[in-house]
Image (tube, rainbow, N blue to C red):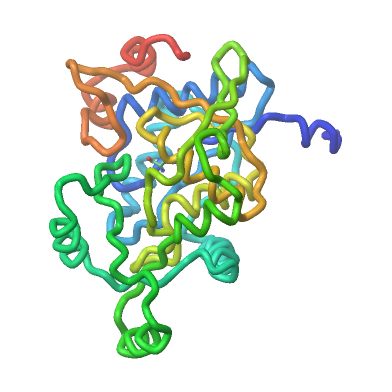
Length: 298
Ligand code: GLU
């Protein structure tokens, strides 16, 4: 029988792909590294399907994730959490941030933002994804105008007021917001993280009642995830995630940001469409070949 103590001390890992493209070797590395670390630490392994993006999610990709992961020998607990089935959880979290006065409505279009950014000049800051910081077009919009535009059916996003959020937590300088990172030998370091790199990021998108950043922190907390192992391409996002966790009073997982695979001299980032696991499988590559291609775990 599993005791309460065991549940509380068992590490929980997760692999959380987005079904908006085919999985590639980089995903295989990430999934198998999670599994390997869970094995070393006597932990559990979860799979989460991050399908909040209604325009890019495809059911064929979801089905393919299950096939690919079975093929490479990644084993996970059931049931699998699909984010699209849990919008109410994200709505609740967004409501809490709104009640704290930390989210404001934004109607701005991409083109409107782009034009305002040009006017700001070449030094205007960009976020870690390369997008310009929000130039504040709708910040401080009078309530009457918000009501009028909502009533007219204009799509609305909700942005975090980064200055207010940092002030609420008393974050004034480097080192005030931190994350615990662990290395593969079990060593832990507390590092400074910087949520302000993201500016007034979108927390609730126009087309879906959440965003990657909000859903990921809500789910990691609801699923009791203790160890987040993901690629270095998401390292900067950890700053924003730590901020949201602190604001929402969520537990703090430990983080490990793993190397990105280099194939043919190119980094395999999650957003690039590289040779997929399906294509490898169909070309007669074996799971053992996949292991050899991704190299040692850790
Ligand atoms: N769903 C994200 C992706 O596929 C990963 C989220 C995470 O590991 O935090 O890039």
